Image 1: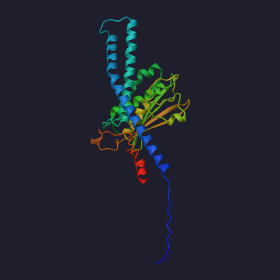
Image 2: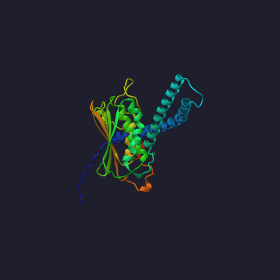
Image 3: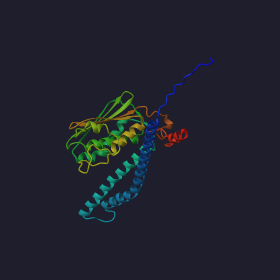
Image 4: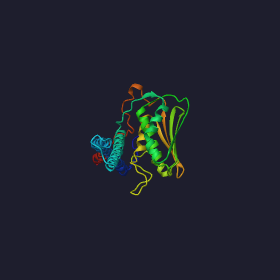
Length: 298
């Protein structure tokens, strides 16, 4: 219509602050990912560098204690035994470092096969028997009858049980009992290790499975360890499509439970040796994208 007037309403919103905040968050996530990758590379490098000399220390100290290089005096035999024991301990620590770095990098491979879950229990008990006897701790097994076979990596399952049992023994009182309960729970198999030890506070329970986390830290902590055992258990359980659960109370002991799917991870049998990453983060956007757009608008 001739002579008509039109009004235009324009709404402008300054999103500079929000975009800058998003860019800062993206940059922080990228930096955190780079730090995590650097840590994994460091652990893997240090682990490999330490393994060769430690194997020599363990091997030669074992030869000395066996008398291959000549008879030793009782004092020298005791010293060689202490060297061998310390070397084995360091090798175990190095092994955990390498396992943890592979799990975090998504390079820990599992190879599944059917096996009877109760058959691995005696071997796992034998691995921790010396540690238990040193503290007069009784090991008990409560295994449900008629358990089905499980599709899983047997070596990884042994490591899960050994780590859980070792942890329970370490935090138990002298003369306590550590109990392993194996039973079916729906479509999963439950491996629960129960101790009567010192227990954990609720805040510590929330951090179970974090690498290097220990309920008691600091230079004056009473219990030795790297804090990697449960993080490896959690990682191995997740590689199988399972989970790690914890129940504890200060002074009343702790129960650590691993649930593994009876029919294995959610992959085809022929694909179970493929790499299963624990975490998959979305690709970070370039940090300068918003700044470039802002410059163009000006």
